[in-house]
Image (cartoon, rainbow, N blue to C red; front, top):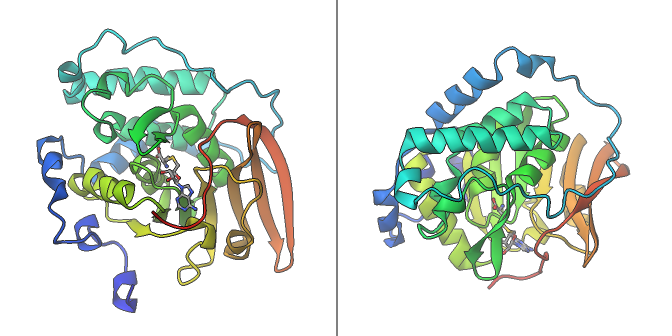
Length: 295
Ligand code: SAH
């Protein structure tokens, strides 16, 4: 990346490979300008967003959110019905309500979840399930994250504050990056599987989100050239959080990551000084594994 690429905001089209012809299927999709997403988020969060008290202490839940998906709402709808903006808004609202019922309180995050059309990140055959609160396959043995956990991680990372520059490890289909783009000023996202990096570009391009930068590479190394970050979020679980990412966190910044193998927990790591980080375990979770290198 050259220094002139670093200015924000830029249309997503300016950072994707212009020669890439794989974006054709996006032409059939409903464009959702990011300004519309932000407006919707603003409208929905309203005054309540400012009432979200910053939580100094991490909450410790009893866990048990894993596999807690509620299957109400969309099962009977055909993909063609869901592609209508009004229908998808309604089922999305129901999904957001279920996420709130599960304990996510941050209205700014809930509004961001409402603003992003999750069905546009799925294969048409899967779109009817887009608003079930579950992770779903996106190919290459990877999944789009469960809306509850996306919201929970963002809530933990924000802690009621406005986010500047954030880094996501594991772009996948680009859904979480789109949600992040509503709550943070600048979003950098890294994916190690080339085909998924391309898929995310294809999915995000028609949305013209100006503040997302997609990178193809090994996220375990972070993006030192763009550091420090106010927040870092991992969408894949390693046995420990990579050192490089801890170093790229701004002092005062918060990193949220699933950690573990078969049994995973969500960890919150805060950088409290140049040489000091604190760690808290938030709840159980289940993510695909974090791998090094690119494919
Ligand atoms: N953020 C996605 C979730 C994708 S699943 C969403 O919105 O739904 C997690 C992703 O992490 C997978 O695409 C996987 O390929 C990617 N991943 C795993 N290890 C990685 C690494 N070291 N660097 C970058 N991406 C990685």
